Length: 123
View (cartoon, helix red, strand yellow):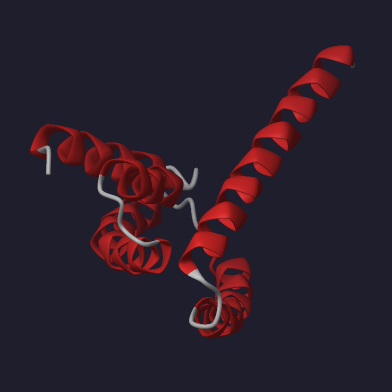
């Protein structure tokens, strides 16, 4: 494993994730492209990786008063339900299919962001 590329992927993932921009995408892409890690394993590592990153980010966001706790609790409860369902489903979907679904999701999100930028420029 190239430790330099791994260090860049990990650091970039933590920075992007702490900003709320989906750093898991970077880390999972790194695992898939550079280490040939199966999608389900990459997802599990990604989830574990973000626990300490999220704790640090949460502390900073709390100190800067950037968290609406009422809203965060509502979404956290929905997120827990989604996590249970998603984890359960991931166990039954082939890793190659999950990888393709992830790529489609990233592509869709990219297109949506691009369209949003175009629509904002027109206004």
